[in-house]
Image 1 (tube, rainbow, N blue to C red):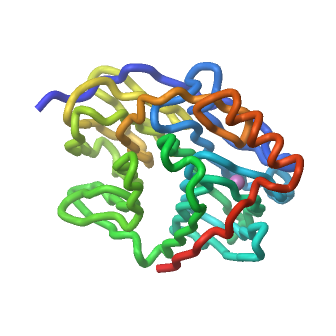
Image 2 (cartoon, rainbow, N blue to C red):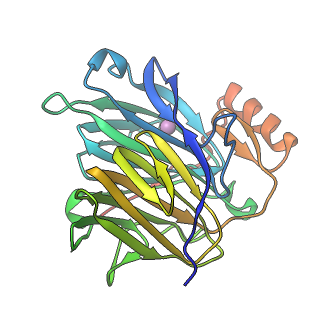
Length: 285
Ligand code: CO
């Protein structure tokens, strides 16, 4: 087994999105434009409602998948076809925007807390103009494994003989939410061909001789195993990996296609109210 080392460390950039929501962005910043197949990682969370209560009013997406994971609080969402949902703490939404979705996402606090992640996963060219779809997974559907001092929620991929409910067929995504007690070690086998990262959202971790602090994303180098250790105060992190698509990426805000022409088409479709071509199918579990 060959342990993956720290390849690049990215401190989150605090940016204002939507109608004034403060997010901590790592993938999708000048320091890391993308990590194929991942296009963006936003960590949102604040105990100050003024920083997020205006939410993300109606906005479009085309050409990729959004994977939203709520840790605390909840998120009301509504799309252009009138579908509504309320993503509760611990639950996950996989939304394949594909040919086009216009929706709103409004974070809400519970007991003063609101925290979560949104990851953008690219789609292969053959799927970019396919039919949009949603899948919501309540907290009860996310398996939890306990191993030593580690608690691992399995959102996607496999860990300790259990499988997460989210299945992204094009990029074989692994997505684990890992809580570690102080100085606890955690390791996980990952196929060598996957791109992988760790994002620390509480505490600090060590990867070999490197240290990774809170609100920092660690891009992992080549290897077939991830091995890390929590600092003295313990740590919470997500470990994410996926199969790269190796396709050209042309992005203009919420539209991610393969060519400039396709981007021009997306902008034109949006301006002329043609972005949403077909209703999203919705599967709830
Ligand atoms: Co959105």
